[in-house]
Image (cartoon, rainbow, N blue to C red):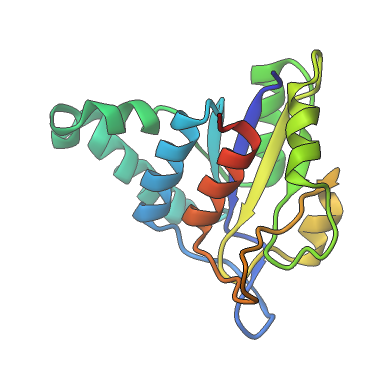
Length: 185
């Protein structure tokens, strides 16, 4: 099975008005996505943010659970947070994933707005193919990644769809669903 990496993108993303912005890191995203990543065998979970102060905030959240009170309080959370890597750019995440896997990962764009994309079943089969290259799943914050981020991807993954036309999941919920569809039993 191919290595799988996760990247939570905070820039460039859009706000509700379609303007390009940088979103803030939240501790909930760090914790929940790290736990999902650990559950589904993700090799590394990258938090991608260009602002040093935001990266420092993420580091402080993680360090609390790795070294401080949290270490003794919940060792399982610490185990999940060991997967987190804090980087400034998608290029940094790709380089780190390539160093880990030994080959450049396919960049996979996820979005609630993708009308046509590779199906989850096809992507899963791709990952299960012997000798397949690793994949790095990009998850967008705010109101999604910019079109330029989609253009950087090798693969556009289909959107998650329920039985209604409402589609506004949190990035944590979407990440968990995507990982389950690609790696769940």
